[in-house]
Image (cartoon, rainbow, N blue to C red; front, side):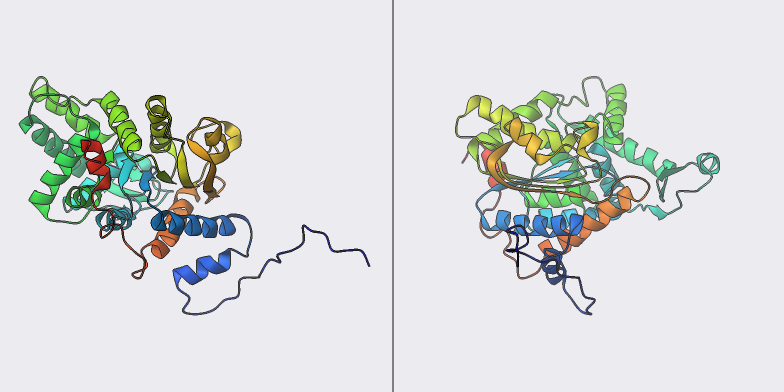
Length: 351
C-alpha cells in the first residue's frame, strides 16, 4: 500500500447542528471546516492572542456598519477597552451621531422606488432608510458646536473628542463617539471631508470665518507618534477603505523616525473586496508586509465575508457581529483593568 501523503494529515470535520452552542464554541468548530468559515475562526484566535499580548490595538471601521445596526458593538469594544484607537470613515461616525441624538434608521428595501424616496426626502443606504430632514438637523448641530470652539486648527482626534464630549453631555446616550469620549480612546477620521461631518464643518465656516479647520497632516503626526511610543501594535480592520491604509501607514511613517518600529505584530481584516483588482480595500496582508506595514513574522488573516454583489454589506456585518460576539465573552479579560488610557498617554508623550 502506498504511504499516505504528508499533505493529508488533518481531516475536515463536518459541522454538526447542535442547539445551545456559544459563539466561542461555534468558532472553535469552524477551525476544522473550510474557506471563509475557517478564516473567521482563525481571526477569532488571532484576536484572542492580541488581547493576551501587550499591544496597542487599532480598529478600522469602513462601510455602512453604523447605519446597518452594529454601532453599539463597536461602542462596547471601545468603552470596555478591547481596542485602544479607532480609525473610522466619517459616515460611520455621522450615522452613530444621528442615532445617539435620538433619531433612527429604518428597515427599507434595495428595490425601492428611489424617485419616490427622493420626493419624500428619504435617503437610502441599500436596504436602510433615513430622513434627510433629520440629517440636515445633524449638520446644523455640528456647525453650531464648531462655531463655539477656539479658532485654530484641530486634528480629527481633537475635534472628535470634543464632539463626543458634547454629544455625551447633551444626550447621555451610548454610542461610538460617546464611548470614545468616556473611555478616553482616540478616534481618527482621515477622510472627514468625505462625510456629512465635513459638510457640517463647512457650514460652520460659512457662519464664522476661520472655524472648521481640520489638520489632516496633524493626524499623520499623531498616529505615527503613538506607534513610536508604543511600537508593539495590532490592526483589526472591518471593511477596508481609508481607515485600513491609515492604520497601516502609521507604522511606515513611525519607522521613518524610529528603528524600533517593525510593522504590526498582529493583523486581521474582514472585507468584501478581493486582491486581484488592485484596490487598497481588498489588498492582502501579505502585500502589506512588502511595504513594512506588517512585521514579517506577524500573525495575520483575511476574511472575505462575501465575494461581491448585494449580499456583501450584510455578510460583512454578519461576520463582524459573529466574531465580536465571541470577543465580548464576559469571562474574557478586558483592557481597562490592565492598560488604561495607554493610547492617549502615548499621544501626550507620558509613556
